[in-house]
Image (tube, rainbow over all chains, first blue to last red; front, side):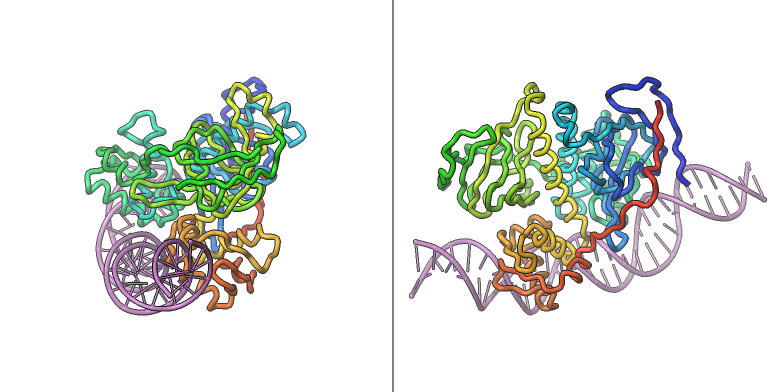
Length: 220
Length: 220
DNA sequence: CGAAACCTTGACTTTAATCAAGGTACGTGG
DNA sequence: CCACGTACCTTGATTAAAGTCAAGGTTTCG
């Protein structure tokens, strides 16, 4: 059932982390596993998910080249699986006692992990299905090099679980976008964004920067 | 409009961070402000929120004694406000160049911040209003010392924005819980949980730990 | 005592989930 | 090469859930 195709693209033992290759659909770690390692995506796409009591699945993040995932304290709070074939760089998670030595690099990883978690939170903030899907498409497009032609690596079902919608609603919404000329579909996984303006408006997470001073006063 | 009542509970300049006191309802920092400081809650409750394009507000976290918030890289991605009167400990956010020196303490803060972000994500994973509110009540109860009698510091509107519901739905749902003898209400802010079992079942985020081995193989 | 802020509830409307049926693309074996 | 199976996507009809509109109640505070 579980087979992994070793890539062996790197022969040397780097201090930075071990390279590993995981085939599409394979579980990288399970929810509840000991969090002995953190991961950085070298290529491909990874999803993290939790399984709730009623068998419902929630996706808590998608991770692309350069993203960090698996940053958990003692055990992994969510499972990670390869959406596509992926190449990963694996790091040993440091014990608290070794913190001083680790320092900078891990600090940076934590920050990036936090960033990822927040992207997920922000997506949820949108009320309607159209809002959420639009925000999702834009987030994907922003990460992609080619602005207009966007490759969507995950299935409708994946997107649905990520946005807390059903795959039906996701599909309908995307079809609607195509009908309204917001996007064009070259197959289900290939989206060209036609009207960034209106799509961004639909996603509607534009805010002006804070106007008033920090509005606080310290004691001491 | 903006007034802050200085507590002056600490006269000394500690390396650990400056103590400050902020009155209920006051903005601690705005969305878009420069992230010069991180914060730890000494007492009280803080909320972080973003304002979306259509004026809609999303709450992305509640922070209680010991929690860390405001951990952003360059600018604050969300605003922070005092839900109750709060006492905070403020830390200077280090520049990347000073990372080596900072190390351990900041590392720990990042981890805690990440944890908080995830609690928010997990709450969103629940499908129905009843699920989300139940999960919310349990999360609050778990943090509270007195298990059965729980003080809810935030308004229905706050809860609604956090759970991405309307205040009506939150109110209705809580009333339903009371009608069904899941909880008892001693005023809107004072909840006694009568049936932890069923409430936890409703929240339904119980999962068994991972069964299969990590299912991965390294190259190199 | 009156105002303001917050909470609750009811009636109705909108939205998304569910139920149900096909359609398309890909891969495998006859 | 084609037939079949599987996995994924789309669409329609119906039902359930949450949002909206509207009103009234409670608490707190000046």
